Length: 556
Image (tube, rainbow, N blue to C red; front, side, top):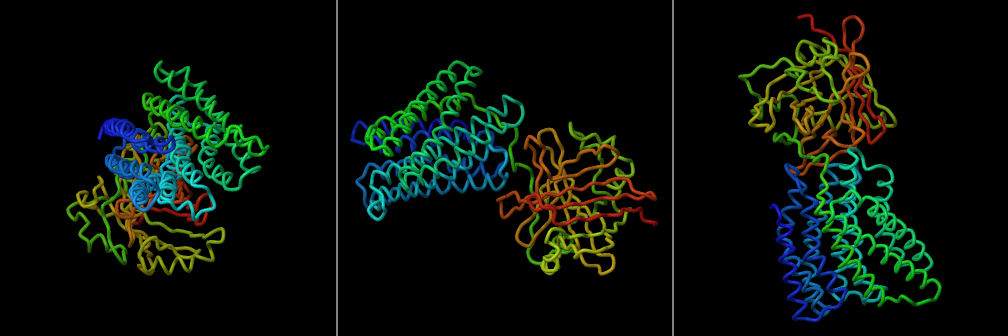
């Protein structure tokens, strides 16, 4: 699919030029068609560049390559007189925008709200579906049922295709460049700017609905952020190659001009001065933004091809699935176990996890031995539910008992026993998979059935732990770090630059989404030749369960 966006936009350019030669179209209709046929495929191709193994971006790629017939439907929807036929063609374009919005939601849900430069891109992908809805209202002639003029309805459609789709994606590409240029995070100023550009289209729509003076205030605030963006681009353009430098500077100057017109228009309405009027705004603001700022900006950022520091949700996910009760016996009933193999520990070698952030030689030899010979140890756990979740623990316990998975008791002590069992890699789809089966030593009730593996991403090895659920599979991707002594920290918390696979994920079918859960294991030397471990699980930033383990070598 390489360069498919260029081919699609080239074909779209030919179609649009021929259409303009043969038929008369208004400026608004031409600007919308320009977005459908040319800008959308160019931007989508840049969004999903390097989409290896990312399910959400493969979805967007597959949608993108079908864009031309949908764009043709969009063209017909604005070229035909408003009514049932034009509205039908607009519905076809709406369907396409909904598919893009689904891709944006998949990207956002799979990665979480950070990093912000990717989130603002996702918001643009979601917003375009709102533009599709307004296009249906405009082309279908439904403006008469709304408290707005037909022109306002049509301008709202174009607003959500440009200010709410094109601009957020361009801002996201700028953020990618900042991260690459700084070799770190985009920074707080960029986060503020990206947040304002993401929320701006909604506030502008509210302003248009309420009218002056609120409209002037919201427009002035939004324009202020866009002026900031334009000036920032001008500042950064000194670092660009000559072609991108010229394009970015042209687009920035055009943005400064059009935003000035917006301010004059809004304050003119408030003060009773009707220049520039709505016709002037459509003519000059629309032409300069659609065919000047947008085109030059898209070409500039495509030529720069700002890279991403990490491709999110591209890690391997276990293929193993089950329904109903899970328990410890599921791996045998389903034939997942590799009976011809025997493993004693969760890891073959702790040194395989060496990275820039983790030095295995600094970890106590007793901790290494526990992870490499887990079957030789027994665990006593002190479970404590916290922050209001204590009241829910009994209800949660009833549900987890029926599920036979993640079956932690209400607050109190429990002795766990278990074993390590090899799993067939060809069944699971990951490498070196082994199950750690844990159960209550007194009641024999299953507590955890966790399938341990690992994967390498960006030269770092992560623990990849799958927990089968009745409706999918939960995956914990954890990184290893050192403490200040000889302990070991295993956590799902991301690093400060928000790159990495760390997180707790839920996979339904082939859709993987990041959950608002965080966990951290801290294993350290204890007294009497025992190990101690603390396991904290958080909902967002609120700890809701705390488990303290005493780990001792079995006597036999």
